[in-house]
Image (cartoon, rainbow, N blue to C red):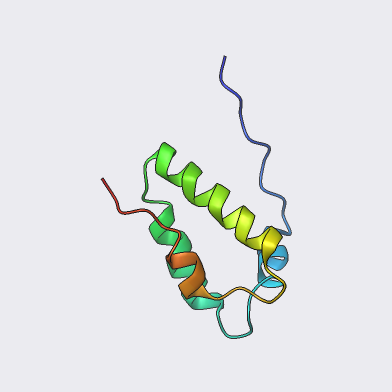
Length: 74
């Protein structure tokens, strides 16, 4: 039996925006679009790495930090 993820909350965009360095919204959106083209395994790797970055960072996130976490597409 496979687990399903809970639905994304309605306020997800606002929650994400609060974690970003001001002015990085469009660049981060581009990174997330790239990540959504990954296969399930690669997307899981990206999401886990991004979550760890959020947990460990004491400052707002930048797109280049997230882009560095996107694995090469197969």
